[in-house]
Image (cartoon, rainbow, N blue to C red; front, side, top):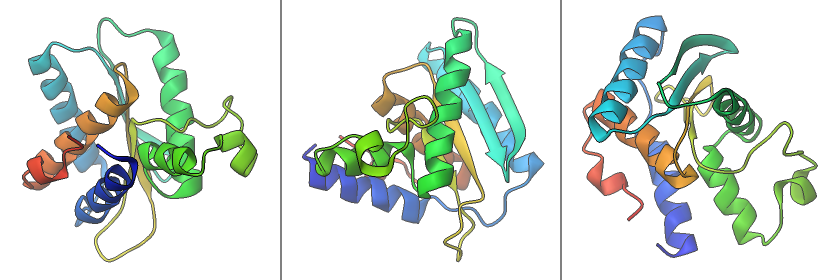
Length: 164
């Protein structure tokens, strides 16, 4: 997908995939759904759902390693600083033909501008209240796993939101 088209699609994902409410029950259901989707695909990921700085769900599937937790932390930090998916942060950086560090002073030790973390927003609000993050696949695949699971959880057809 061409860069501008992918940026537009990622923005559409964020506009579409917003929650009526989000609490511990939502986090548990969504985390379990991501786990089930990953298991059905035969892939291993670590999953994190954080709301207002509080960890509500974490699961590291067999086949993941401790490094995945650090990737999750850095991707989630990007969502919480820039108020958009870590994938969209990376696309914006790519379009500007720069690095996140050069553009914002955000070091890779703390932030990661690759797919895998998606903002939690409530409908009607621009505020980002948390993030759903996975790590274990290629970044774009991490991103689409989260997008697909959120769409399924919300009862939305994920096909129009796909990047390919």
